[in-house]
Length: 261
Image 1: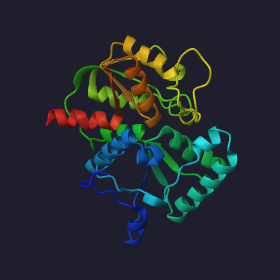
Image 2 (image 1 turned 120 degrees about the vertical axis):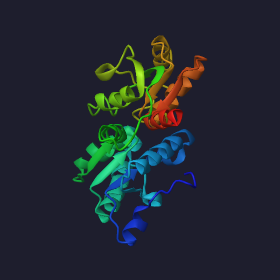
Image 3 (image 1 turned 45 degrees about the vertical axis):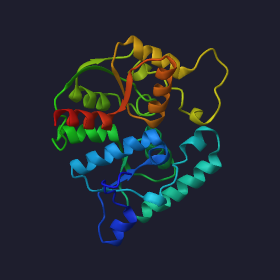
């Protein structure tokens, strides 16, 4: 994390007698993956801009167990989930903001199966609410052409299609839809623990097929809301030797703000 960005840690805040309103669940990718770390930094900057009272778990945050469960290792999932639930409940956490749709789905749905119920909000929805309330400014709309990729776990998995599109609409004048979008959205190829295993037999990689749809849209930029999608779409476009830029929603807001300053 950038040194100039203050990131409150839940243990320190509670020890000082303060209970933050929100926990920001960073996720494994957001903590360890270089590309996803940029998203974490961008989102934290926006949280500070909007005056959101939040903290992170820091070293106390573990993997949600989503990859283990999707890969069929229920034992590891149960172990990680129960440890995380004990940590969350120990701090009395009620509201959680998540940047990764896989973490979002696990905390919202999988943990509920274990009796742990939290108010879990994906950051696309949270950003939309901050923009709607005027707590964040978008700068001037960009004239570039953009398209939006639906991540499986946010879109088809949890029915959240419009919130991220409203964020994009607030930032760009020209938006185009991909051939397969919303309920028919095409996976980037990394979900269901596929990110961590070798490709299965087939004629082509899913991310390269998705890259071709992005190129066919004529967009200059594709927006994503998932660390897996950011990686897979970027790799697919590079394989096609295309210069379409892949951005996260938080990065796009900061980009517009900087262009206006």
